Length: 464
Image (cartoon, rainbow, N blue to C red; front, side, top):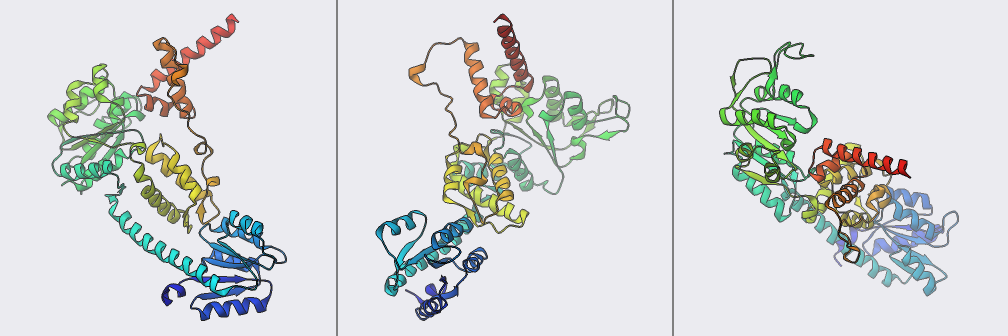
């Protein structure tokens, strides 16, 4: 074993006998390890808390706090610390129990120092390998970023590659993908890589405004043109003239608004609300939607000519369920981000917390993952995020929406529709806005369905 590898491993010796602490520490240092000693369990815990040691040799029989209680507290503080318990009353059963509780090894007194050295050499190797892996992961993490977007899956690399290709040349781009997948980040990346990166990037959420307010937001208005218009204001197209306008959730716009957007794309002209004057604008237009616009066109809810104008270049951002290999690097990114934001030295996630996150299917995509890590980083009191820091719904297996074949029976289409909508609402914890987005219908359509359902329930109750 290289002397430098041993020197990098600091071992804390905990025993209520000062002479035993001194003797063991001296032998460790002669063997080339860094040793610190204490007779206080609380002092040893503090050394673990501040990261002074990664291995603790602890006597099982101590006043105040015995070795097993100490082991439990250490692993709560830092699951990455290794504890070797030492006892004068060795038995196979007690050794198995100690290891089951998380001890790395269980040795008997008097210490077999050659065995201890072998165990510590193995741990020194583990920490050396981990250090190398962390360096490689950091390099991989740096290579997994594209204009602030994190991803290393084949699907996201394709998105990055297409964005780089079209950024210098696009006039209109359509970005599609589920809610929370990162469509706005891709839009910002396109703008930052474009020749107009120094100009303004204006964002409008089309689903958040009714038609009259949306028209005023995009095209501006004249004073007195409607109730509340106390002054003349330019819209986003004028504000971002020479730059980029990003229309989020463009699939939510009405057919009348779509006709006005088509004029902007075709003629690069706008009119403020209440003004006869036509203004020329030079903007790059990026639109995004979580809907299938081809289906919307067939259903008559989206203009075919506008769709083809917008989708001359289409970038599809996949949902997180379709790129699970991005979850580890996203976890690393969000952990680093929120550790800095909340002033905490978070070391990572426990293995069982990682398992819970990897098994979840993330219907809210990257945005949901970020919210989970942000909340956990804020509330945890430890250096590692554990399952107790995660929301309860992540612990429960998600119910499959598929009907078991054995229970299949023919149903009217209305009944199938009702069952599906109820299951999506349950999946979204009764969040109607999110359910409408997943179902690909307008919020008013969902509200109408729920209203009809309530009326039927009341009628059935009255009949009973």
